[in-house]
Length: 360
Image (tube, rainbow, N blue to C red; front, side, top):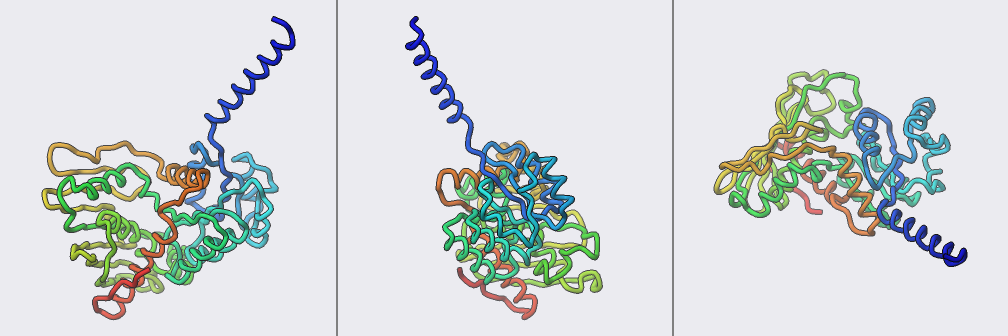
């Protein structure tokens, strides 16, 4: 074979191979974590190492030393370490496509708005904010910047929960008539930020009660229209600022109902049961990071499924929505809907009456 045709053939084959490899290797979006607490350290950062379309590109922290440790561990340059004061400079960081806000609830709005203004897509931990008004401002900020806003409802991507949604939606056991959902644990350190109302917005309800609320909403497939709730408190010193235990009932537009409990007082509540026309199904444990187990009426257990990394799945889903230029759910509107119900629950505790849930 002559030299020139051979080189042309070789170059053409090389380019074709490189193109094929590029097509096989998805683009990895750069994610910046704002806040390097327990969740970022033990769940989110390890999940980013597993994802096929995302990578850890930057961190925002109040500790320069911690930032340096993270850059060395995860292989990004020290120039991608930001403080809370110089965070806005992230606008010039081409390596960052997404900002993941993992801060106390009261700080969510500020950093979502700043991230959107910096031209970044934003992923925000649940609960979305402390008030419905803050949620609306966050939605508006991302819409104005033409950037996606996603909320960290990891269970919506987890196989057990997704199958439970299918069972409800397709009425495998008939229509869901009632749901019982509970989640709580024994709260430890009395000095933690979750027990400060200014930072957390509330107690057990805002922290883990939102999981039970979420399950009821996505299994029913409709929104609650009114709620009644009571709060009990056995340790008025430790829980002086926030709720310890709340029981609440919800009535949905169709007349169907749900009953929920959340607590910071004791362990053991981590489940949901959907009672249907021809049986029931549920999960126990239902809301942890791993170890989920399902049950169903009848011989076939549709909810006997593998456990996976919830954070990996939600990060990949949000990244893929950005890459494909598609909408993402659960969006900011989903976070707002939860806060509207939570607001009605707190109003019912104060009034001692049934309270209506405001509409979006």
